[in-house]
Length: 319
Image (cartoon, rainbow, N blue to C red; front, side, top):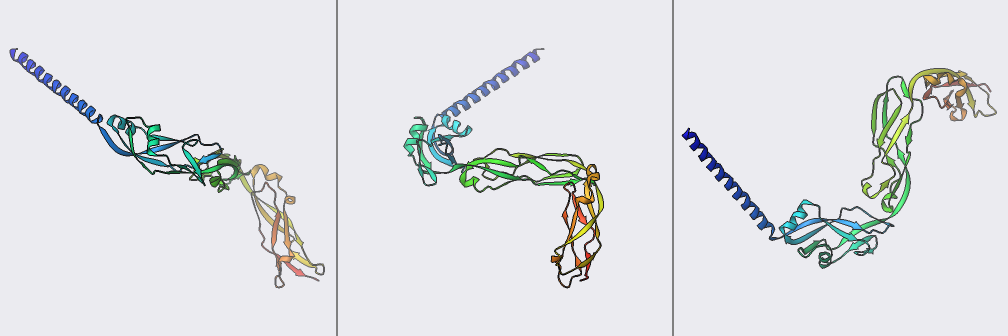
């Protein structure tokens, strides 16, 4: 029993010694940190440019301009610079001058030190000493959208209506030097497989590299189309021959040709032979040729694909 009590007392004393040591160690570390931070240090760090009071008629191009500034200040102030993004404000009403196609910032170290840093900070150096900001005049332009969509339909299916995109054009606003070069906007390429139902897809626009300097009325479009079951039909269509000289009489065969077409099931009964027209142009023959080439010159809008199954129409001159 006595041994246990003695062991507990010794353990308690040891723990107190460890606690005292840890307190002393932490206190020493804190004092060391405060001593270090209270001293002055010199370092060079990049400052971002915050552009303010830009005239409405101008757009400053985003050239990612940064200003490297060498400062001398105490450690506590350096903590602010290291743990947050330091910025320098440039007032386009008072701090810059317009020279040709750029705005120039050419203020002295003393001016910057007095206007944007307190007395505990000493500005030693600027790099570069002169900043140039390219600008443009705002231009508004409406450009068409080019859809890139690769649709693979299930067997026997296809679109029975034209693909409709909304919006089909985009309003862009930005510097004239950039906007004037944009004549259209492509969409990203979208691939669809085994499609058998109506299309309703959202597709993003491919924006130019300098998109941060330009405003877009929309950055994506929707593509819609009706998808239906399709079938193939075949009709006999009479052949007409045109541009035969008045002093020539010809006979041709066959008088009708077979035309195959692809149409949705819902529209199949609406298609008739009157919706097609097949013509042979005599002017497109030569003296050694004894056949005409039939051409489809009229096809109903409801038909997806169509073709003439006969490639030649034979003829002879009878007079």
